[in-house]
Length: 338
Ligand code: GTQ
Image 1 (cartoon, rainbow, N blue to C red):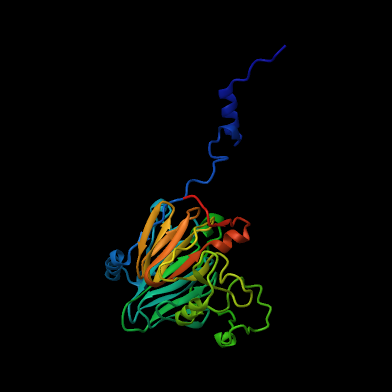
Image 2: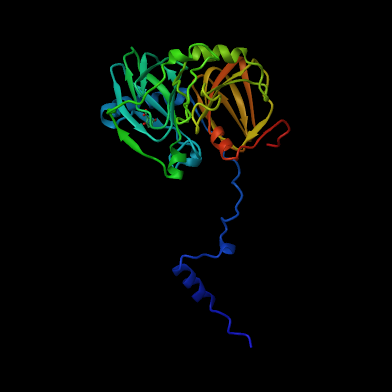
C-alpha cells in the first residue's frame, strides 16, 4: 500500500514558505574557492594626474577626507581592493586639515610623496615623511594636519571590507571629549627594551609611527627570508605580533637581479614600491613596477619577485595575521605550479 507520491511543486512551495531549502539543489553550497583573481597594478605615472584632479573637486573641509579608492577590477561592485582590504590614496595640501574622527576599522598610512604633515593619533603627533608608516588602529582618534610646503599623498589601507562582512563597522565624529591614555614613543626609543605593562586590552601596537630611514636600515641588514628576499615586519613591540590584527605590514628588499623562490599563500596583499624597479610574476601575469606604483598580490597566486637594476624595496600590507588567527593561513614555497 504505497501512499501517493507527494506533489513536488507543492512541497517546494511549502519549503519556501517555511524558509527551508534543499541543499542538494544549491550549486553554491560546496563550491570550491574560485581561481585566483589576477593581480592589478596602478601605475603612479598614469594615476598621478588623475589624483591631482581631485584637488579642485573635493576639499577635506567638505568631504571629510580627499581620497580616491583603488578599486580592483574583480571588486568593482564592492569598490574594494581585495576581499578584506581597502587601499586608497589620500591627498592633503599645505594649510589643510582633515578633521578628527574615529572608527572601528583599523587603518594605516604609508607616505608616497611629500612631507611635513602630521597625523595625530589619540593625541600623539606622528610626523609623516616619505616612506613612513603610521598606524591609526581601531577606535583611535585621528586627524591629519599639513603644514608642509607641497601636496602630500599617502596610501591608506583599511580593513573596511572585512568589517563590513562581519558587521562591526562604526564611526564617530570628533573632536574627542576625552583622549585615551597613550604611551610616549620615548619609552620605546631603545630597541629591545619595552615598558613592563599589561597592555593586552589593546590588540594593537602602542607605537603608531615607524620611520622609513630606520626601517630601511633594518631591512638592508636582515638575513634573507624563506623566499630569498630580505623582509622586516612592523610589529607590536609589546607582543612581537602584528602591529594591528587585520593588517600585517612588511618592508621587503629585493637585492639586485635575483628571483625570489616561488611562494603561494591564502592571504592577500597590497604592495607599493618605495625604491627601485622590477617585476613580479603573479600567477600567469607579469607585473612591471617602478617607484610609487601600487599592485595587488591576490590570494592563491604563485608569486615570484625580481628587482631590475639595483636593489628595490616594497612596502607590503597583508591580511596574513587575520588568516593566521582564524587558522586559515596556508603558505607554500618552492615547486608550485602556476
Ligand atoms: O584618513 O581617516 O582612506 O576615515 C578612508 C577613511 C582615510 C582617514 C580613508 C578614513 C580615512
